[in-house]
Length: 550
Image (cartoon, rainbow, N blue to C red; front, side, top):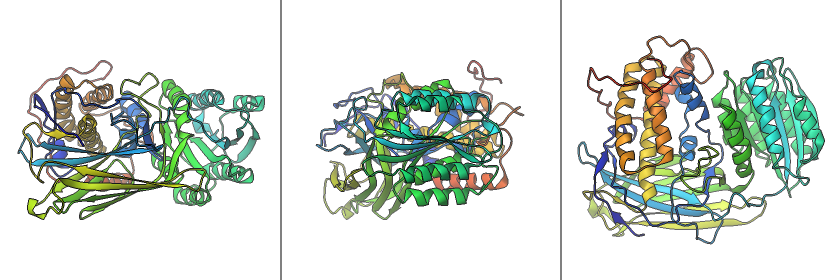
């Protein structure tokens, strides 16, 4: 690996990471460039929630609950530059190192970023024909904009279906009904069926989802992708309403090879149910916050989440005894103990963005990354000088019986704990990944604090975060981080509203129950150990962004 030392001009001196990661890590940039392609499609993990609901709540003047955030989904809205995807496989794994000093107390921060990209062009990527069942919630809670969004999205989706695809359409309210059964993707019957969808009644998700699975099972074909898409506000009100029972039923079908993606919308949206279903179903999870999101999800993302790259992915990270593996961020099923980490990913799919500037269709589809935090130990414990660790990844190729393995070695000329004055990054994307992680941690901390009424505490996180991200952007312009900053600014001014007229907590308007709040605090303690962030100085006045009431 080739390293570049960097001279500090501005520091992202985030005490946040002292809270979120248990260390005082911070990034710095002098705007230097790193050689690499800078373009090419990333690889996304199935089951990720996107950032849409969080954005929609803030844009509506509400306070988002922590359950509306998901590190995998948030990371996926960031296009991280990686070395070229020239490994000779459909998936290229990169292990990049970042070493930097805490500008508050000078302590060392060592991060390993696991990034994946592909030489496949999303615009021309071939895919297997589909055996697809679409289950659409047509209950009364979907009336108005939600059902309009669904119809518009499905019409857009038809443009990407062909005569070789077999598509079924199921509607459900109090009960499930077959609207169109297993017709070609270009059959006019589909257009008529979509136009006939009307909202009314209660929400029987269980029966609608089960009918969709049964339909896919009845027409199952090993030469096709056997897949279900569920479109709903995710709030079951009749039939079997237990989320555990729903997930259990869905998981049983997933084990037979029938995957599931979920698309949510509406004010009473239940993100935890829809996220759990997608995670177990090795699919994707989206929220339609506005008409632009409809276009983005159904025109851009559908093309890529219907192109699976890998299944049953197993990643092993081993670090030299000179380090301890403290934590892994940006993936769901990860374990870390001692100097060993294990990550299981049900599926990997194409991420449609091919460059940081590729945001015309929206930020979704960046691909993101997985970030591991290392804690340096005594240099005398190093077994292999110059080696930080190694990464091994195995995966199964969808639709075949082929398995693949790739190995990456992470090297460094530094001793464990040695921190160059300007920091050291093996590739520029590591630094953006670090900033991205800080922003996610700040959003989650602010959401947890505001969820139990500590609005001043939430602002105590967001105000310094905004200042430090602004300083980083001055030297490192980046469209993803600039958009993140706009929501940091909006969120921090919501903390001045003493009695919000409507506080959205993930499930729409109103306050969460005790179980929800307790779960949020548990997540916060697990992800955000360490010291409290210092409150900003009193008496500071700020100008609110346009459209935010103060």
